Image: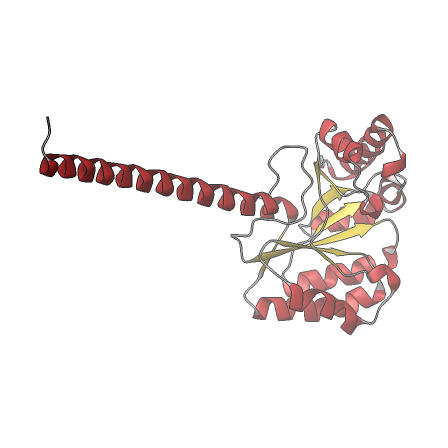
Length: 245
């Protein structure tokens, strides 16, 4: 038989033991929750599997990636390259295969100046409307065209029109490619004023952002200011391969 005092001690001991266990459970739950939250944030930045499309690069890097999708606008490529050279910036050019075959000298110049080359499909089709096999053919035909001219094998794919049905990304993955989209869009194909292009990018910039551009006259005019202002904010410029590492 346990006296009243002994019973109170035992109850107090059990209560303290429960409190400790509750504390451990709460701490573990909080730690697990923080881990899941942190993982979720990182998952927004970088893909979790080879097939996941990429919309932005590493958020730990104070850097921006400039991309140029090319299926037309060859008359503005030399001016664009001149801006990049003057500002000491390297970009990633996603080229359509038929454009590559028509403009091999420009392709060589882009590559010779140290810019990264990516794959934009061959005929600039609507990838969502093609089968997996047809998308792979588009990618591989462009891959062969670029490799023949530059001896560089591409492994980054930007679907025409930014189309993103799952089978498009699957086709790219089966062809050995990472699918690249964008974080910030200049919408320069609509021919906005240079100041509008600047305003669509500079105030919205963030770590790891991928900027989509095309070779247009007003993009060339906007580029020096975009680069200057982003550098003032402390951003460096990386290629897609560098920023997603």
